[in-house]
Amino acid sequence: MKAHLTRRYLFSASHRLHSPEMSAEENRATYGKCNNPHGHGHNYTLEVTVSGPVDQSTGMVCNLVDLDTCVEREVLSRYNLENLNTLKEFAQTVPTTENLCVEIFEILQRAFPHAHLERVRLEETMMNSFEYAGGNNPRR
Amino acid sequence: MVYLTRKAEFSASHYYHNPDFTPEENRRIFGKCNNPNGHGHNYTLEVTVKGEVDPRSGFVVDLKRLKEVMHREVLDAMDHRFLNKEVPEFLTKIPTTENLAIAVWLRLEPKLRQARLHRVRVYETPDLFVDFYGEE
Image (tube, rainbow over all chains, first blue to last red):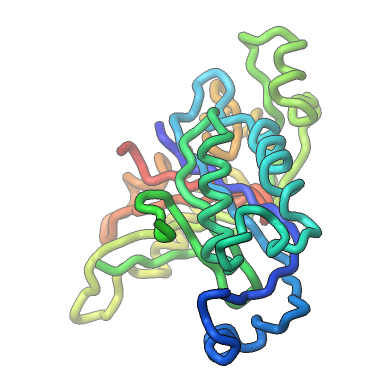
């Protein structure tokens, strides 16, 4: 029997939304307050959903310790309390929550072998969230 | 097709143990959840049903009846219980959140008449939940 398991994690980071391909006016018009050159921060909530058959002997889709260890090592330790704009994956890419969500999906898809990665959902604030379930990378 | 979700809460205790594993394996795989005295959670259950809106009533399902079925089939059996010892499914299966979602589905699915069961979601804590959509 296949089940979907979702775990929530918290991290905090800062970013500035600014595209070098746009003029200063275009950046301000597009990104508004998020274009402030000094950046600003969020408490992000990350939801990771994995799926697979429920193992008869353990009753689990995957061991949560394995999932927590992987997310901590690959995602939380990389992004928590960092300025996203200083990281290499956002050197050429604007660190919108859309792009961060896609990045986290791709990191976990490579790094977590114990269950199928269904979806990554990222809340930037209580009022907005983004989801990515793989497929065509919207950035390519 | 319209989807309707009803929430309910219940509290129960459980522990994780497979008699086929050695004590060391049980401790390694299940960690603190292997404590035989059990530990508890406040579970949140979300039951989603789907169907067409009845043109006369405007309902997908009679919510009062859905609530009654959820109470009779799930909450009366599981609320304030030790799942391993008091809920028949878990005399033989480990009461993980995965198996709990499957057990709730199997209890509800045959009792729903008006609308079809779409999803059972069980939150063990606000940061951990399982979705079950039936046999795919």
